Image (cartoon, rainbow, N blue to C red; front, side, top):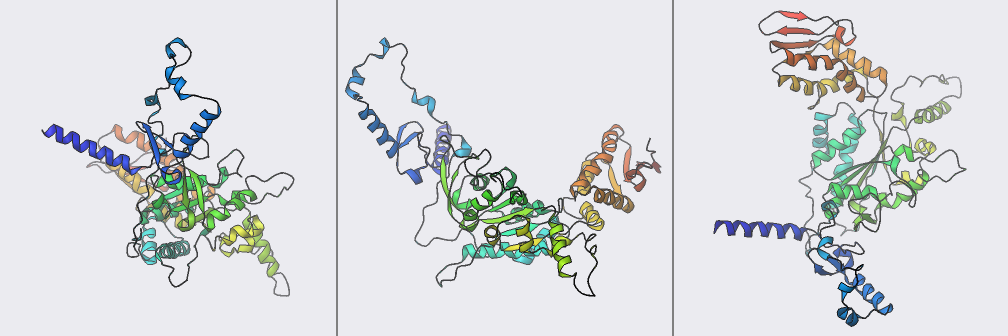
Length: 472
């Protein structure tokens, strides 16, 4: 009796899971919401009315007679066999199945609640726990995101329509652009798609179509179109689609991509492939409205400093109080003086920049900021290594001078915070290899001499005075 009850419950759960997804036509790959009611042939094979009618029309046009077909003896025709429809069942993979939209009620409740979205100061406080510095950038993003979700929930009864607050962030490599967006999406619990502009090309050329950006967001939302329409898309390396200087050949991955993205950024109903990066006959298609999707574009914009410097020198090079031409040469935060005109000169078209109204820059990382990145965030690199050695019952300490030595080396590499991990991996290799050999080791202290390869770490055995290990 109990076994029968369990079987019934399992069958109910299976049916409930199947009901979550839309039926997709086996021939044209359109979902039920687009093609209309499906005709179920066998198992999970469905065909829409249009494809079924086209099939009948084709058969009638070729003189096919169903009556004669029924009377044919197929056993006398050795090279012809009937298709086994059960072999075709279930050929659509799970990641290409589209979730059904919830039926709209007369008084539709908003997907998001204004009280569930934290206020800007709370968003910034949460970002502070994970990201060091960049206070201006965090403030701009917190306000923009808060206003964006208020826009989604606002009603247009009074005729006031709030425009989208898409963002363009500019900052040197390794300063935390991607990390900021990842942390933000995690805090808000909304779908996030991070994509790279370098792979995008104009439609018809090898590479990803512009619609693939939205397709990735749909995949991040588990193919739930309604949830995806309130998500965030971060397009990294946006500076790589700037207009090319050489105008002799077709610019399929530069200005053409910017023009193709205009409607996407502004808000339009885009037909996107489900579970694939490009459209083809074997991939189901669905429609996503980008009106309420927040777009954040980011890039390092190399050589933009030269454009800013040229503009600033021109403004301050007239008269007796003219500034020296090399005044801005050593200014690390020159990007903070960027204007829309500078970005346009770099190669971004005005129509594209007009759809990214919020422009802000991130600061270059100083040695002090790099030291803070090592120790302050919740998931700081040093905390990760301390946790690894805790599992071997060993305490890991860093002298303050050692932290500044690591920051100095990272600064010299000129790749931002990414250099910190590489440096720590290098000098922690021998320690991580040797520690598990001896169960008596209690504490390891990393010194400046060890970082600069002039000495070794200080090792203290359990119940024994500390011992300095030579670098050899």
